[in-house]
Every structure is written in structure tokens, then in C-alpha cells.
Image (cartoon, rainbow, N blue to C red; front, side, top):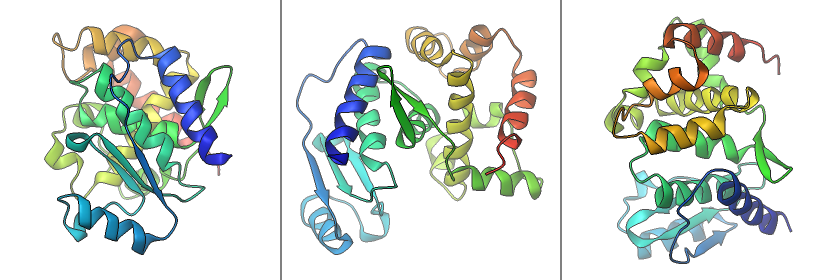
Length: 219
């Protein structure tokens, strides 16, 4: 039941609220309860080194397949299906946006036909960065390349992008931002100009408001 809901809710939320171009082929989803079985399947079927295997799952674009080590609290199914829909609809989406959106949906409640992001412990790297004075702003995030995004601070970037999109969702602006960014991607492929246009605020102001938003959580 939980698995069925994860799949159905994500498909409904993405198809009804965000994407124009739906996936044109079926994407199989393989689910494993035990990590050893999951790892063996991945290494037997896909060109992924053992050290590079995600402990919870992945969407393999070149093979059009989603493979999940199912953990009820993790939200990996919602995360990976979100990637699949963004891939079909917004093919040029930068990784910071793609990962932020998937991370937002992985911890969300389905309400009125949409997934509404909730507090997630992905916030921990953000709090650590704030406390250690290593927090970097939105310009750095939105101009970050894949080598940096998926490098040593990957958990930080995932968290920052997630909470930016959750902030927009609470303001009722996430759907508009997604569509504006997608439709005008060639005008600014970082998403900065679109973010400022949709919110009516400068990036400097948004940086300050996002920090306040992050610090507002007391969990």
C-alpha cells in the first residue's frame, strides 16, 4: 500500500501540476528490501562501481530504469520518479534544481492533488554550515557545476536547493517558477533571473529570506 501510494501520488502530482511532456515509454521500477540483494542486482546489470552505488536507489537515464532499496522513511521512490518526470519535461534542468525538486518530494504529504514538502532532516548540513560559517549563497548554488554539486558537499547542496524550493512552495510560487524556468531556460540556464522575476525580489533579498526560513525550523 505504501509503495503503491508513493508511485501513484508522485505521478499524479508531477503530471497535473508541473510537466507538459510526459514520459513516452514505461520506466520499470525494481524494488529490493535487502541491501545485499540490491547491490548484487546493480553490479550484475549496470556499469556502476560498488563505491558509487547509492545506498537507497537511483534513476539510470541511459537504461530508463529506476532501482530502489526500499526504506519506508527515506522517500526514494518519490525522489527517483520525480527525476524521471523532470527528465522528460525539462531536459536541460540543472542538477541543483533536479536534485532539489526530487529531495523536496521525497518527504512530502499528498494533498489536493499535489505533493507538499515537509520538514526533512536534510536540513542538518545547512545548520552545520551556518554554525561553522561555511554557508554559501544562492548564486553559488545555482551556478554550481555537476563536479562540485556531486562532490564533497553534495548533502549541503541537496539541502539548500530543497529548502529553496520548499520556501517557494509555501509562497505559492513553485509551480510558476518551475514552468517559467523551463520555458525560458535558454535565456538564463542558472534559473537566477527567473527566480528574481517570479518572486519580484533580488537574489540578495532571497538569500536573507532563505536563511531566515531555514532558521525558523525548531525540530
